[in-house]
Length: 383
Image (cartoon, rainbow, N blue to C red):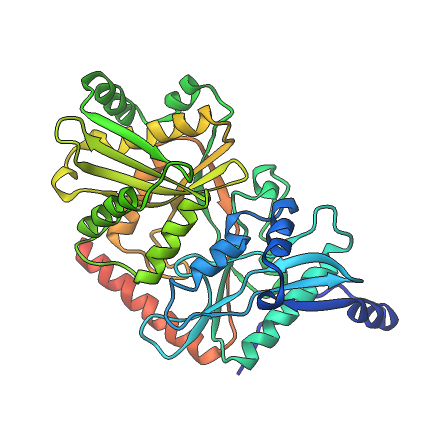
């Protein structure tokens, strides 16, 4: 059974017919790469997760991923793009629209587009159609907090609710790099600030920054090895890591490595997506033998903020603040601890307007029971 009613603006019958006739769906796979990406560059709604690079990367994240992304043309003019990846949900037989652990980005419309509401109605009708055709049970979506409307406070409420989504909004830590370095450092929690200043005085860590101009496969391999060692296992697929490397080499990411000044061994690192002079901390790892060093992660983040600011970046998103309650899923104690660590770097807590939508009512009940059980187990483990 499929449900999730869209609440459209009422249109006269003649207006609706004319509107539908003028709009056409264009399939992602049939579009020239430069056309899609040029649209994302020009759209104030779009950030890196809307681009072809991230869409291709997302296909390496989930099991059995299929790309149903599309664009909308109105009278021959491109007016919107809608990333849409289907993937299996864990070990179940169900499928969802999402991009690995990232929700589907809210559609990006042309800057100054007229009648945005009608375009969005068309997009979400198309998503409903694709969900029904391919037995998609569930969808996660969000308004990217690195997009201009969120940063400019132009979005004050969750727009996904207008299209049948339940509100699961959370927040994220976002550093405004227009501040002075002193102002950014003052925003860091006092204990973390002491760690940073102490690490600078001791000079035990060497921080390197590798962008698309100087990055090599060898330096990336050092980060891979570190990441797997920190995780205690191989994570993801070889295809995923090849795409991760490709984004770095194309200048769509920044690799930060921290070395021991004496041994020159890599002891920490992180990988940032960079686009439109804004950055997002996507992957981070500390060597297990150094995880007790309280200053290491803080120092790496501070040096990263300084590097970005000095190169005219305007925003750095440290990461999402996860709730302890059920919100789409139940987050683990480790995930909650990482979330708390991100809060210690000050900045602003900006909204992540997020939502979920069920196309299959039986799966909705199944997921509800599973989340309730996971919450009980986490609470018992914490008791």
